[in-house]
Image (cartoon, rainbow, N blue to C red; front, side, top):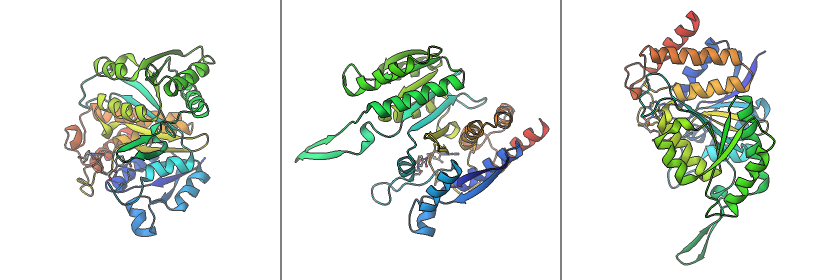
Length: 334
Ligand code: NAI
């Protein structure tokens, strides 16, 4: 069955990495029709807005999108397309599986963990005000509804993917009410999943343990700010954002994306590494139930990297197209 996917190529290296990923997913048997849309700087130039309504309509219609990185101006300019997408589509869960890849330099081996981040509230609720001159308040909002929803998502994910342990990360010793509620909701939901072992860690202790013995963790669930920071820390454990996939999911809609930026410094030079978006493509295939096809891509990626073909950011010499050719060759011969 042909699946229609909203494809947002993005800015900078976005078009280069999305083209590579489309080629590989199709070579692996993915029967996709791509509905192409632009967002970010590219959309600003062509449509006068960074996130045209047609993009949102397309994702709502197709339920699934694959998205390259988009540029966000620092300081002034338009608001982050990524944040707008999450808000407009109620993509309440951010998922980041983190796993070592062969021949990708990193300080650790044997890392295989999943970071689940609540995407809609916490300190990112955007409620800030100046009380008096020189005193600012920023409100951290934690609700039972959102905490229970993300916990349910995380446990369902763990169960569906054969994960055995869930660690709730918090600072409930200090923020007794807000983080206390988050922890309480996770524990309540966890009681429905006796097959997944539940424990918890204080955020600062977790950070230390992650950089000492990351292999001891399985699934981590965190509120928004902690999740944002720990997601990138976790990516750093296995070689950085260039090799780490990501997804933002709601009840019905899902956007699979590269977590690195648009890399303006190397855009157009044909040397971008498509590994991160490719692995997001693998997550997308699994989400669509295309397990065999996803497995083909994953095996090809491991084989090509193990054989020493790598892009420059990983210490290799392959261009984006040479790396993509190697992946397609591996799939076709496998
Ligand atoms: P960046 O991730 O674009 O680049 C940081 C460094 O990593 C650069 O040296 C770049 O060349 C390299 N790099 C990143 N991805 C690479 C890849 N796939 N292959 C090879 N090298 C790669 O971060 P930066 O420079 O801070 O941000 C650039 C723009 O991207 C900004 O406008 C930022 O807002 C946006 N951004 C967008 C994201 C998204 O759409 N998900 C996420 C992060 C940043």
